[in-house]
Image (cartoon, rainbow, N blue to C red; front, side, top):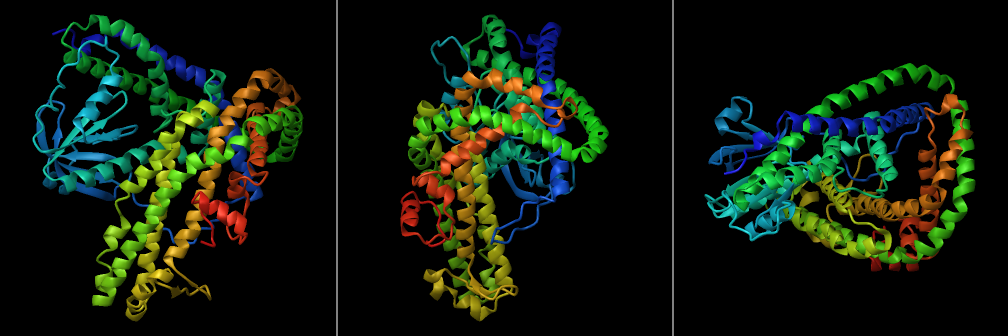
Length: 592
C-alpha cells in the first residue's frame, strides 16, 4: 500500500521543513523591522496632527458583534477524520470560525467543539465533477489514467453534498437531506471564507501594516509585482503559504517517486503529507513571528520619545527625500502613464466595474423588495408584523450578487495581457464584503426607522415605493430621507472608492515594474540623502511608491475619459455629460 503519511516526515525532512520556514522568516525580518518603525512613526504623526477619517456614510451602522456571537447553527452530516460520516451540530461564530459539536446538547452545555475550522482560502463546491477536477489539478501526479474518486465521494449519505477544498490542508465534506439547507450553509461558509481571508489584512495595527508592506517589498525584490492570491488570512498563514510555494517542488521530487500505491491512495498520501508539512511550518513560524513582533514592539517603545521630540526634523528629511525622488521619477512616470496606461483606462474600468456595479444594483433591488414586504406587512397588521421580515432583511442571501461581482475574474484575460494583472481574488472578496456591509447598514437603518415611525407612517409607504419608500423626518435633520436614498449615497461613495482601488491595483504594479527596470538603482542610491538618524522612520522605497501613486492618481483623473470622470466628478454633479457617461457604465451618481 506504499508509505504512510507520518513516515514521510521523518526527522531529516522535519528539520528541512523547519529550516525552510526559518530561512523565509529571516529573509523577511529586515523588511519587517524597518516597516514596523515606519508604521509606528506614521501612527504618531497622525496622532499629533489629529488626522482622523471623518465618516461620511448616510446609513446607520450597528456596533461590532461579539466574537462569540452565533451567526448560524444547524444539524448536518460531517465526514470525520476516521473516514466515517457523523451527525454533527455545526455552529458559526461572529469571528467566522466553524465549530463541529457532537450534538445540540453538548453545545448548550458549553462543552468544547470536537473540531474547529478556519476555512481560510477555501473553495465551496456542490458538484462532484467540479470538485474532483479541482483536486486533480492540485495533484502533481504523473498524468496517468484517472480512477474513480475515493470515498466519501462514492458514498454520500444524502442527496446534497458540499465539498470544501482547502489549500495545503485536508478537505472537508458535508452532506444535507434538503437543498435549501445546503444552499444556506454554502452561503454562510462562503462568508466565513471571505472574512477569514480579509479581516486580518484590513487591520490598521503596526504589526499588520508592517507585515503587509514587508511581504510586498520582499516579493517585489524577487521580481513579483501586483496582488498575490495567497495573501490571505493571518501573518502566520501568509508566511506558511510563502514557505509552501518553495517547498512543494522539493516535496514533489522527493515524495512522489516513493508512492507505489494506486493513484487514489497516492493522492491521499500526497495531500496528507502536504498538510503535515504546512502545519509543521506554521508551528515554527508562529514562534518566530511572535519573537520578531515582540522585538519590534520593544524597539518602538524605545523610539517613542525620539519620534515625538524629532518629529519636525524627520518630516523635513522625508520632504527632502520626496523632492529628490519626484525629480527622478515624475517625467518617466508621466510618459509611461500617458503612453501605456491612460489610453486603456476606459476599457479597464468597464471590465472591472461593470460586474461590480451589477452586483451592487442587484443588492439594491433585493433590499427594495424586502423593505416593501415589511411595509406591506405593516399595513396589514402593524409594526409587529412589519418586523417579521427583518431577520431575512438583516441577513439576505447575497449569493447571486456575489456571483455577479466575481465575474470580474472572467474579464481578467485582457487585464493580464495588457498589465499583467492575474490575481483578482482579493479585489473580489473585499468588494463582496463592502456590499455585505452596505446591506447590513441598510437593514439596520430600516429597523431603527421602523421603531421610531408610527403605524400610519409605515403603512403608507407601499404607495410611495416608487418614490423611494419610507420617508421619515429625522430628529436632527430638517429634510426627509429614505433608506434607499441613503443606500444610493453610500453605494456611490463605496463604488467610487472601489473604482479607484481597482484601477490602482491593476496599473500601479505595472508602472512599478516598468520603471524599476530603469530607475531601481538610482532610487536606492537616494537613501544616502537621508539623515542616518532618521532612516529608521523614512524609507526610500515607501517614498518612491507614494510618489508613483500620486503620479498615477493624477494620470487617472486627467482628461474626459469615463475613468477620469468616475474618479474626478463630485457625486452631486448635475453635468449631463458626466452623468450620462457614468450611467453608461452603471457607475453611481446622486442624480440617479
